[in-house]
Image 1 (cartoon, rainbow, N blue to C red):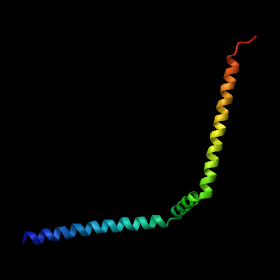
Image 2 (image 1 turned 180 degrees about the vertical axis):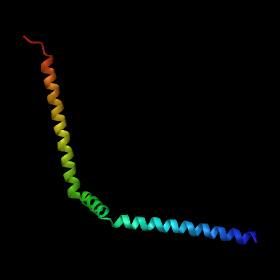
Image 3 (image 1 turned 90 degrees about the horizontal axis):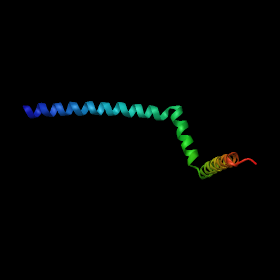
Image 4 (image 1 turned 30 degrees about the vertical axis):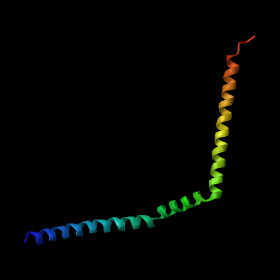
Length: 86
């Protein structure tokens, strides 16, 4: 008799777990179909395109050059300020 009741308890426990997984699956499917999720997935695909990767790399390089130029200008200005006046 103990084996039967233990088997019934295990079955009920597994059924509860299955219900929880079903709820999680439904929530995920609903999230996956939301407009914001679809839009974000589309953005990801666009950003993966080689043309977009090249453009992003160019933008990043331009920003780095701009920062480098600003730093060099700042160093030059500090050097001029530190020179003794005649």
